[in-house]
Length: 169
Image (cartoon, rainbow, N blue to C red; front, side, top):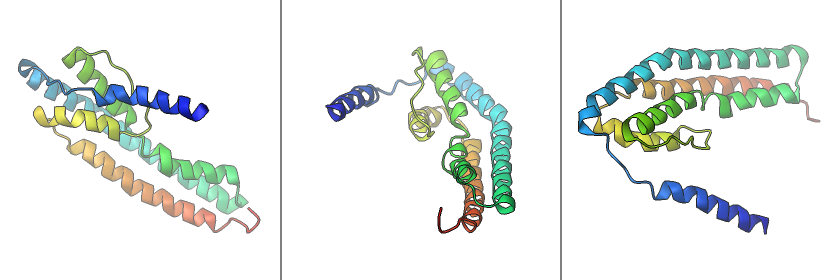
């Protein structure tokens, strides 16, 4: 019964996305849209990079703590979450803001945040608007590359921390 209810709820939620149609930005607002979206990206870019760097520093501190005091499951989980969830979602607020501006200001649609911890669904929605309005995505791509680079660094910390795990843990 619970599974059936869950499936029905999921179908109801995803139907909203399935029937969503692309509604272009009005031509007279295209240049303004491009300018505003690029301004938001340019403003948020250094904050996101700094936030990722801070997460990597936190990961290094956790690795060093495990090295100094021994393996600790709680610290190990925190370390793993940095590479699995924290860094990949570092730009989630930026994408949410971009979607909100696109919907409310340029499409006249009430903004409803997507229940996700990934930027991919939001990027799928925004991509067509960015293409049609010639929005420069370079910094968004740089963020993605930087996230992937730093995830590899944190994964090395995880591998190093795993060496301190005893057979009993």
